[in-house]
Image (cartoon, one colour):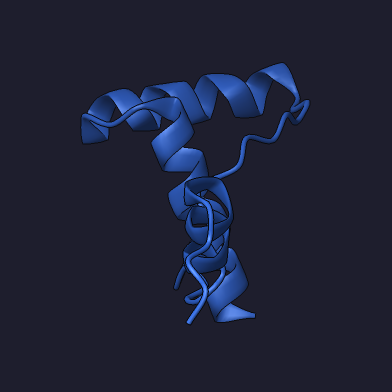
Amino acid sequence: MVALPYIEAQAASSTKIAPMHHSPRRVTITVPYALYSELLARSDQQGRSLSNLAAFLLEAAIASS
């Protein structure tokens, strides 16, 4: 067996197993002010960030379709 240089060995080992999930991605959307206000109030009531609430609602909408 031929010994690979460290960088080549590291690259070869990193391609063996693909990650099971991808890291979260950011998206930017524009919503009407009334919807923004409603989402902000709801996120405050639930004690979560606006971003977390939006992600939760989008996931729920996709799952129910």
